[in-house]
Image 1 (tube, rainbow, N blue to C red):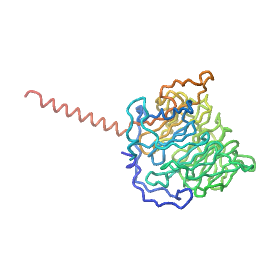
Image 2: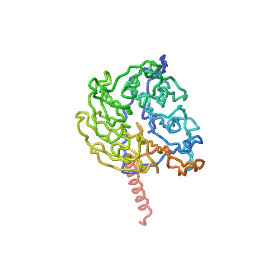
Image 3: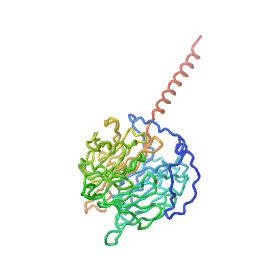
Length: 433
């Protein structure tokens, strides 16, 4: 099944008059779709590979910071150390001819990025508009935040900057957000700062925002830089925020009321994500080998810990939960992607995605596919500054993986049975009477 068939037909949207160009939208009506059941006991095969595009002359030590699929599954977005954001459209999504002509040579990139957007400084965070759909160009946007820059809203149909959202400090200078996230309705952008969250109206770009302190009057709450944001997917109005002070807090979205403060991470929080049913929260930190699972209905003790090899790096390593909500995939410094069963907390399987740190892993929202990004910062000795770093092509790269599904195995079994029966019939026909 192609992505277009999986997403289904949507109603025609009309252009918006708002400065951001994004209409206030509700959840689009889609055909009922059941996500395929993945066989994680069968290693996936690499469908597409991207390496040379990240080996730029200006930054030979470039590496990828993360990868995220668009909500409609038509493309994925990567962030890299060269302050660049790149989008890659899946060839079977009706893309143009240049993209669909994929290279077959193993040492070549599968195809070129559709769009390359340059930020002025290091990219801190990026996120897709939650109702982005390639069928509606108005909704094809994502937000990014970079050092010493305002929040940018990018148009993925043209690669141009659509608008900006600016926050100022007490000296009336622009201050950058360390983390960003759209609220579930797609009407606001929540941005994390030092002991504060600023909320921007998506349809009112500029310097208008509401500011909320993460500390309550009694000094309880989240201290330090807000490094990660995540909303509960069940429309319950819960917002999870992690900070580099090794704590996570859960607030109400409407009034920023503090509900819980979670302690237990060994390093600063770099990623938070709710389970699909909204009952559990998963948190990961830098220089911390464990992803912690919290039951937000109790929010007292850790339910279980999921190991990953990240105890020696400050790098942000993004994990993801597959659309059915049963399994979690995460990378690590060992170059492997580990799959865990969230019902039991047990390790299920792993596969080597690169010979370098896996900085990001993201499941496709509709198809049995996933995307991974790899690489880490390398320091070159001054005497060897003009020499190339010897890399094999499995480092500092982005890859798309295709998984085997249960239906594929059943079809293969049926085919084998059919072939065996046909062969037996042919042998009987050729036997002497």
